[in-house]
Length: 257
Length: 216
Image (cartoon, rainbow over all chains, first blue to last red; front, side):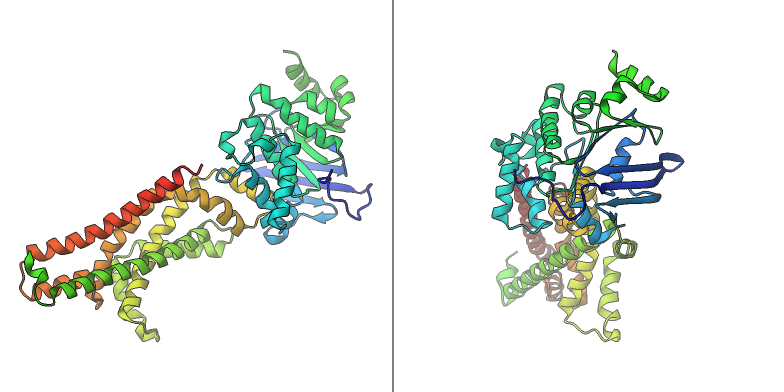
């Protein structure tokens, strides 16, 4: 496997992503409240919680698509730069997969996976195309390489989006509700790619409503409500014996219907 | 109607026609480049650039073009800036049209879903890369129709340059009038010439629209 996460001199024990005392407001709404979170190399963290709880916002702060009002975020020991080229460089090391895929509509599937490597990483085009074809093969859409995103199903588009993010050889991958916009029969093909990625040792932060994925692939489940991390535990412990009332209430609503 | 083919009239008319085309083409080029740059300024994260773009558009879009020609032709030489009349006309017309181009492009930028820019940024693209590689190519399609209106208006606006010593079509008309030919005949030929230019521009844009429509 050539697409394993970039290894460096950081000791395995050191956390890869650290959020300390992070706060964010949307006007009067305190959407992230004193968030402390540390994610280890190779860890798969799943964020769940009711809508409006701040889980997507938290995910997006990690590559600064959302700014924070106070607190600090470090990735691989380096603080997240405020803006400019430094921030761009850091974002290249943090893969992001969106709910609505956001593939570049005017580029072919192959070009979507090539463009970041060539323009940001300055990889020579033949090498970038080779990497791209390998990744498309890996997520099972190699046959669609020359089509435009709009010609693909939602599940295929999302798998291309994962390939596009992986092409940057990121240290950590963020998934912001990657299956929420998909027809039910396409959810599994995307989750399967993500499970594979987790098994390969990728560090992942996943916001999702797929409890099955949380159970089977997560190392840790974070339950968020009202801008706070209310509870965190291993998936087994969390789903069988939630401690907080909010989590019990949430799980009873989504697991029994 | 036949006066056009008497004496040196046709040469004068032809020179005016070519001068109008040259003035329009140079102004269009300036307007397109400057307008795109201004649009980039207006959506940039840098407040100073945004303010510059907004000021330019406010100033140039809201000032009568004749006044701009005055300002450039009579305002720049005292400041030590000396160009030919044609270059002054290109600066006035190009700077004026750039403010319209800027707003058309900005409206096009706003039609591209925000997620496209977020995806580009999350790959590590800079603001410039995001704009030129992802946003502008997708904005181009929606921008073509309003842009054609701007560039059809441009050759007709160029007639004002005739009053500022540029020997283009409209100034040819003045010469013919002074020579005493029928006003109707003169304006017929001048109108035909402008129609030809406008129709060519419109056809070009329709071609571009068709070309880009299939590329999705």
